Amino acid sequence: MKKFPNQQTGASLIATIITLAVLGYGIYVGTQYVPQMVESKSIGSILTSIETDHRIDPITSGHAAKEKVVKLLQINEMNDMVRNLKVRDRSGTITITFSYERELNLGYEKKKIHYEVSRTLK
Image 1 (cartoon, rainbow, N blue to C red):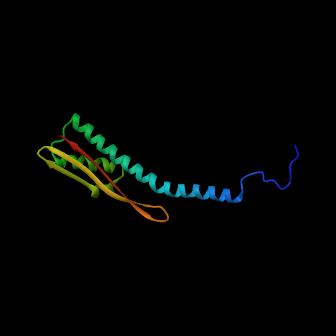
Image 2: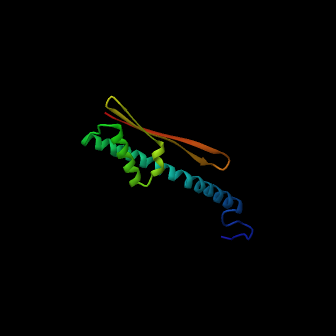
Image 3: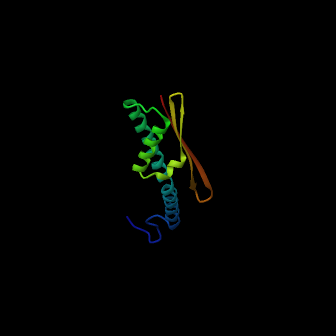
């Protein structure tokens, strides 16, 4: 088999640049989104833990529920999330809600993402 000297034997420069640009953009967005996802999953885990503890040892007041949640936030080093915490106690039904926004910079626009997680303890 004879090889011609003018034939290309690999990816073109343009294809390589496009591939690297797409990969770089994915990494740029991913480094912003992954910490937000981890934060959201941690809050869900904290609420699940509170719910499980409530089944074993019932929480009787909103104040006690808030103290438990704040303690778990401190353990997870998420002290800044306390300001996004709302605890409501109505007739023995305690509702714990986290509501907050994060910003995701896509390069061409900044998109606000709203997170809201709520659990009711009866």
